[in-house]
Length: 424
Ligand SMILES: [Mg+2]
Image (spheres, rainbow, N blue to C red):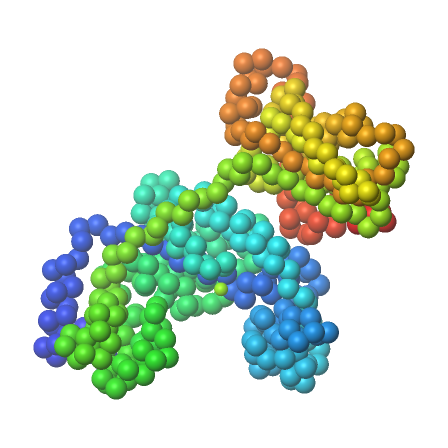
């Protein structure tokens, strides 16, 4: 039974006393951000026509992986379940929109979410592809308290990526994680240190991180059903039944989780960025080579800009239909993150190193020797040149294209020659 703060039970008072005695002077502010129906949300963000429909990401129906991998809330309303077969799901919901998994899209969205988190703190610990803990204790002066930061992040992810997150805000990781499950979707739940017991203790013990089915069963045997029961359970029975793990869970229930958000080595600075492709047909005309190289350079430049980097060198690797290959590198006249400049350098390299009539089987364009974009632009200010403003104009044009493409899909906007091109 849950014993609230007004309850005069001696066990409660003992727990409460210890809690107050051990409360640290200043509390940490920990966020746990969890994307709602992540895979399906990524698909809907790319294809707005799916919004409002029951959607499931499923393995291919043609092979035996034809099972539901993820579904949205609307599909859930039809009792569509993860891991059932596509056939079973269709029986329940004939109008179910079925899409194949696109893991590179999910990885890209995950990376973009982390890019947003990184603007508020460098203490980020990912927990799976769509969940992360953030310690924002030191960010209050810049961005506000935990709820305010959570709200900024929630809004930005919704506006910029078109997906929703639920965020738990608390003074430790366990309660932040629990908070992100309390309200969904697109919601924030705060579990403050002074009133956590009234929020957390009435909840079933299974709401606590690391309480799986078998642990819950063992706890039931001890008469522990709620997190409050666990907080008040005596140590001896807990240790007898669950060992050290039982004592750890009790500490969690009491709000004494002091584990740090492990600063994740954020890979914001890749060593090189490249994109290669084997095209449907061998490239045989200068127009086709130019199209291919421009197409690849666009994604390379986009990734550079996403990390605020530019490259000093550009290299190409080319394979011909007889499987001979070569790689060449050139130093750019100045560092760049513009596809126009990267593709120009790459095309010149290919032209210099191939016979005019030779066909190309595959091409890779790489940006190498990366450097921070701001540093580079700062250096240019010394010249105060017209060149700088031209570069900035071009840069803002290309970044605008990035944001349109990331919001509405890669297909919507591109180079004119990309339209109806038979090569991709
Ligand atoms: Mg999730």
